[in-house]
Length: 417
Image: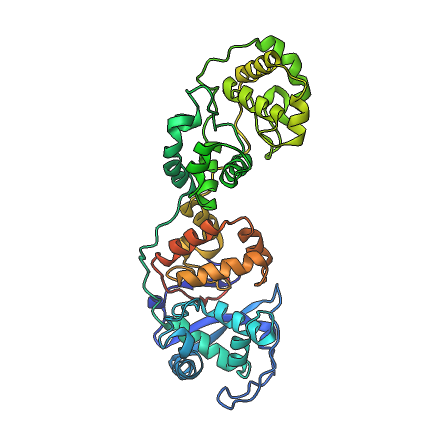
């Protein structure tokens, strides 16, 4: 627990009346006078730079009392009288890590963190005032956890539930047992979503499919496609017919788009390996006649007679399908394990520079993650973490951390060895 002469202790372990936290030494250079925090004089904020050293600043009970009076006049309207926010998308500050609060307040002052309301609120405060504010909020009991009724979404389970309506034609787990209906396993989700949308719009002709997908929202389509993309592909449980050996020669002209052996390497192009032969033959005939619109496929199918179509379909039906390159999404618990590396177990940070997330407002966490993902809020580390999160991931993480029990932690110096 010791690093650079400092150790971490909980409030209950400290000497009563004195608490300490750390600020960047460049902000408290020796010999620089601090303007009285109640004078209202404008501060000259210095930006906090990466690599700035931290030194201990002590806050006693009188400092915390001063911080409370200042918080009541400048912060309570948005963040609550006790640092527990009742304002949408405004964070709780109670029990937050004091060094983090101090550094972020400095960032608002310098304009490094954008928010005109916050800059206007804290812009006139000097360093001593910021120290006392940070100490006061850190001294408060953290907000209680929020066991909300918001259910954490699981796109794979949601897709499985929605796909139950498809099983009658396309088979359990998307492996068809009915000739004329395609298997849905082995298809990239991007292709499968595009196909469902084409049926819904009428671009692809099938009254049955149009009625099935008419009321399916885009998010549900994505979940259905993801579910099928993650199932183990197997050949269709139907009879192929035709001469697969004869069809292999004809398949040479298809490999450029559909891949060797009918395993596509392009998400927008379907794999044909293991597909139901009757469905493939029907689709090729539809392209040839123009009832299914695709100029490339129409040109490819134009020279095929009925026997060639049957043989080509038999060849692809006999091939072994392979899974598309689809990763199972991480659960909220799995994402949280990654976040906890910096933010502490269950969001209770032990790093003075990194905020605690436990029991934070759910809507605030959502907003912060969206802002990091879009670049509205700057942090190379958080940008890298958030850019791969889906909207569902963000909602799940926000719900997860809002439900965790927050634990107050303070930081005190000990003599170096």
